[in-house]
Structures are given as C-alpha cells and as structure tokens.
Length: 402
Image (cartoon, rainbow, N blue to C red; front, side):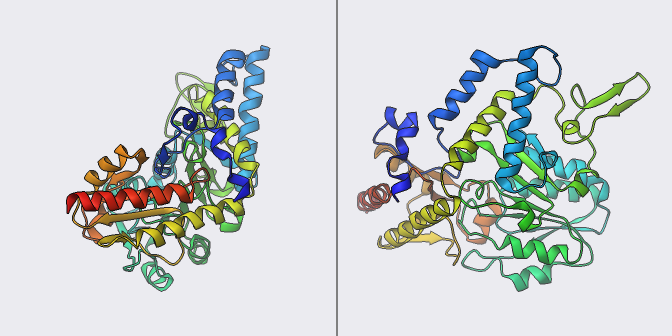
C-alpha cells in the first residue's frame, strides 16, 4: 500500500541492515527514529523524577508523563486517563489483575475461564491462583483450525465462572478471536473479562468501551515502543476493587509507623520511580502509529498474512498450523520433518529473521501434536517481496535436507 511504501526509512535498523527481512514482530517490533529520539531527548534535556519535585524539570516531566496517560486512553478508547495503569508489560499487567483484583474474590470451587490458545503469560498466573485458592482453571477448547467456537464458549460458562481471560489474537496461530461477542456474552451473566491485546494493539482498531471488557492489557514494545513499559486498562468499577500489590513511595498519601493511607488509582499501582523514559517512548510510538489509519494497517497486515499462507502452501510437505477463517499477520508452520530450529537457523543465513519453538504456548503445541513450529509475523514495514524471499529460502532448505 502507498501509505507504507517507504516506511522502512523511519527505522534505523533497516539502514544498518538493508537486506534484513525481520519477520518476528509478534515477539517485538523494531523502533522508529522518533521513538529513539524521544527517549534520548528525555534523558538529555528533561530528566527528573515525577510527582515529587516542585522545580521546573520535575513538574514538566510529571506533566509529560500524565499527558502520555491521556494519549493512551484516547488511543484505546478509554473513558478516562484514570483507567490507565502503567506496568512493565503485558505479563506484569496480567499478574497485577490476578493479585490485586481476583485473588480476594476467588474461592474453592470457583472457575477461571481461559482458552486453549493462551500465551503462558495469560495462563500461568490464573493456573497458580486457582491452585492456591482451590479453584478450577477451565479451558475453552478449539477446533482443528485453531478457532474458539461460540457455542463451545457458551457451554464452558457456568454458575461457578468468576473470571475470564482471553487473547485477542493468538501469538502462535494468528487467529483473531471474536472477543467483542465473547465479552458481551460473559457480561450478560456478570463475568469480568480480561483481554490480552499484546498482538492486536498494533494492528487492529481498539475501543475498549465498545468491546466492553473490564481489563485490557498490552506491551509498548509490540507497537514500536520501548521494552519494559506496558498498560493495564481497567474499568472504573473494577479499579476501585483492586488492592495495591506493591508498596512504597509514590503510592501513598500519609504514612505513620502504625498505619498507611494510600493514594487513589492509578498512582496507587505505580509505586517507586517508574519507567519514565519508557512512558515517553510509548507516547512517541502512539504518535507514530496515529499518522496511519488503523483500518488500513489491519488490512495491510491481513493481506500479508493471506499472501504468506497462499505462497507457503505451494511448498510440498509444508504444513500450516492454524487455519482460522479470521486471522492476522501471524503464520506458524512446519517444513516436513525438518526441525523448526534447523529451519530458523538456515533462514538466518539468508538474512531472514523468524521465530522457532513453542512460542510460550506449550499446551497449544500439545493439542496440535508438534514440539515446535516456525513462526513468521508481519507488520507495516514488511512486504510481499520478503515473503517471496522466505518461500525461495524454504524451498532451498527443503532441497538441502532431501
């Protein structure tokens, strides 16, 4: 598409490595110059701690920090910046919900509902909490195409279901789940819902109020921002029920040796000195994405995923894992009996960066009865020419092993 034709020029890494086909965007995205500059500029010209000093540098940093919170709220359609809590990333945000919200509300015999395609980050916190509380982790099955069927989802809900956590887009299969419909079905009987938006945040238009989810989580590094910064969106009614899980400076009103009075959300969940530069970088990343139409991004990435699936299917013996009707730009596959790690190693020799392994979804690998897959994942700086390079390289690998 014309809007993305010269987009690589914005990313310094592609100037250093002009022949690199970077196809591991589900893991992390590359960073545009304006994000790098914003982080550097903060440290060079604006560095000060926030919400502490009454001098200009500190007050300016505090204002910028909160301005990004408002920017995030607008970006995902939140009602207020007060619904936005900064975290270290998606994993940290999910653990925060498990510890601060659900732990005191879960009892023996209760159920937490997840799907069979969840990333370990959206599985283990609920698994461990259920084991601790004597509750049951209930798994929504998927079909052979890697899809959650709504009637299976409806059957999985019971009177014991107290919480649901579902990925928006599978980081392994590329399946786009019908989370809006699932949220509405769950909310009809009062079940709070968390949506893992790690893979959807960069590629789909997100409106948390339209989704009607109670929690939405994502990481900055998935949307061209820095690592170590993420977001937890929480509705007002649930954020009021959350208890702080870490204690220290920045999260309190008054402290005595006998008792502490805590501040209000979101600051109560951001104790200590936060990743201020990371927040500035996140704001710059949102500015970068905002110059494009999110629907055009979604269409472009979907088209790359469609083209990749068609071209990969021309390779004899290659099997795509996950063939959902509704998918994004993530494709997992195996090349005959050649181990995924061997394929990735050979692709690296062709300057093609892919991921090989279980992708932090080991239970999903067990369902499909494979130890690992090769995964390619696309974003706006990828092209069909890179997919063509991938296919040529895979044919060479296949020929070599034969």
